[in-house]
Length: 211
Image (cartoon, rainbow, N blue to C red; front, side, top):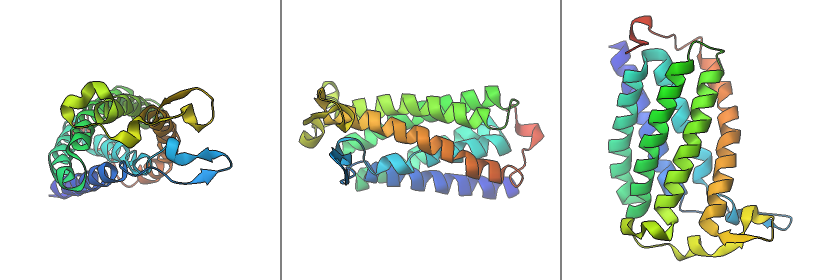
């Protein structure tokens, strides 16, 4: 029962992260620092989504890759279904596609590196998984070529300085993607703190590590 209760908790946490991120990604960060408008760089979803990798990695550490994949898939089904009610359909489709690709890559990398230094598996998995997730999500959600998934958002196609700093301009969604990834890198590093703190509490179950 301990495993069942833990998996239910992980699924609930994953669902909350996915739904919150899908909702918050629709809102640019309207904060100005000097001459830089962070609305050209970030959405609020960039700060919540990296928590999904923490949930996946803790599940993988404790119960192995099979359990982690189940949590990811359950979070996908419930989270994306709810996201159709809290965000645009195109956002939900983009999120689901990016989420599955990024999380499954994270699981594979974590499992390959789990016997190395304690920080290497969660950091490598989350950073590389985040890169794939970012590319898929922002392309599917905002790139004109993927209009098959839904109408384009005019505000996402407006030209803005790349990263809000340089004179070269690009559609706003590209600046968002770049800014989003840098935030994910930063949050990925920060997430090592709770991961390390929970290592001694959430002990691995040896019989499940290679399943």
